[in-house]
Length: 283
Image 1 (cartoon, rainbow, N blue to C red):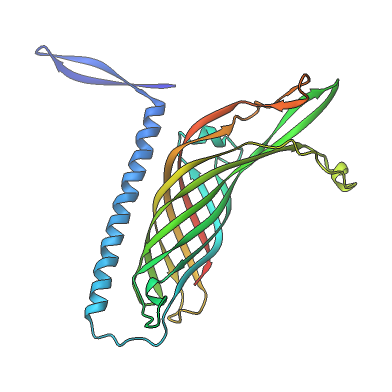
Image 2 (image 1 turned 135 degrees about the horizontal axis):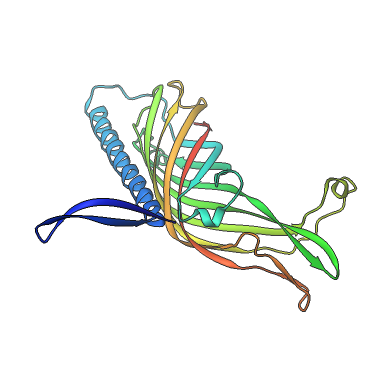
């Protein structure tokens, strides 16, 4: 699909009407690039504010607190919003949105030794999974019709560097730098109906397909709670992720090959571009 725009321009001393043709895919690309640039700007602004806040807190006469926060933890839900180029790898019936769970554990490096202190830095890792859906493919095997279910999602394994205020208050903002990997995972099984499942019939697993790609990103968020670092807090976090191409099973491309008695499918390739919104409980 292409979009045509009429414009008026000066050419050879005369005003002429020209037609500017913009490809829809390019519009999506520039829209995603704008989102990434905006996210980077917001991240740099937040990181600068956190850095200034940290310096002021160190220069002030605030007494040293007996309670030192040694870790940032989150266990929560996440929702994934892929960019236009990545949507062809998702193509689900949920508006191309994915959902799943996340767990991260970050530590305060100044709490590792004997002289424990609060710090503005957190180091750690994150493990998360996003389920993007499934599709059903009808095939004929030996004259009998059947259907196969292909489920797919992306596993994230990231290292996190976090900058945040050193002391715990009611509202604690933070900024993250992320690097790690995206792992596309899919499985193919018999699509059993409710009666077959009720009788305990197990679906035959025909294996699946997996691939991996480099992931990098930036994030920002806020935690809400009391001043006690050992009490649970509500956390909201948004990350912008991008990386190298990931390979995936093309939707509805699964076919049965009677010669080899196996399932065949087409493999596509798409760049990884997505935004994660995470909500959960942590410390």
